[in-house]
Length: 473
Image (cartoon, rainbow, N blue to C red):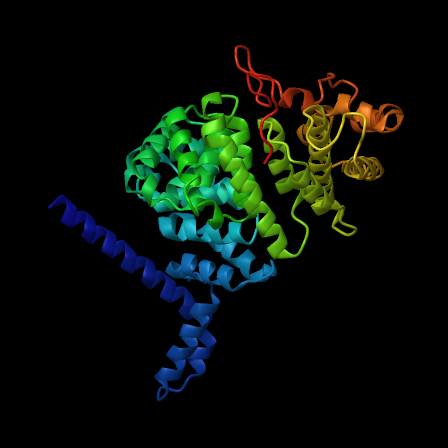
């Protein structure tokens, strides 16, 4: 009886509010109604409806907000989008967030992430508004899209990800393989590691590995390697799956680079898988990368080249033909936006430095020439590094860049400090280094020295116990 009484009260209040709105609108169009002929009531009602629409009492997109956003994102190509349309859509989601279904919220965020439209105010509002009780209405797909959108837009929100991690423990068993991979990848990208969540992810991925495609296998492997999540059994199963016939052939260049990064991180932790799984897989990944580069007919991205070259250097799988191929793929673009060019230049430097260190390692191992003879690729790579560093000096870091971003840039360069001194001589030590590396930064050994070293009690990754160099790719 109490519930019935309450519902009747709610209905009465709604009717009173509607009547008040009609009275207000009638007062607004009073002169029009006074002039209207009694024989034309339909015209007066149409004028009243028009006034109601113009008053803004109804949302523009309504319950179809998420579907409209998804369709618009699919139909938008080459990154071109209508800023007015998306501004109105973001405004409605912001002002009417409490009225939206979980699907509307997540589909809209996914569409914004797909077009790289980052509205920090909207993202902060959603992250602060969502609560533990509200997230209970989200299913596994909704939460995976929510985390994936925030990660793709590089908008960190530890509170939101912690709430999602707690809720996912109940809903992960209902998730599809792509949703499991998306959750793992999103958490790794924003550097949010929840040990309980990753244990559940490892158990579910192990149980349902046969349902995973090549891309999802790589995403999970890359995510666990990025956050250093301890899952040796899962890593063994994932690498075994990638080593299966034809699986690597399904990967694109991004997947190849992610797999190279993952096995490079996992090799020191699981040296028993080095010859059994990691090196055979790296051989297949290198061949796949070459096929993709030749089919594309354009230079590969520098960050992908750096990932493959770094994995080969870390695992001691040195091949002069591969070094020559990757060196030929590396080029400095002549045009580009100033804001987005600096990270690209740093990626080019990283790739060139890794390839140059690979040449030294190959010469020391007796692969493709003696130590005293530098191939022409070494000279070309040194010139590339010098030109990139000179451009970094000429285009100083933006004043709007955060201190952490500038420190991260200094650390990337400082990792190669010793090697750059040997390769570029005074050009680095006296001219470039003082302008690129913060004076307070500590001096570190160059990256090539640490890549081939082994952990205490382990054999070096680049050689077998007998001292022979590992077979090249």
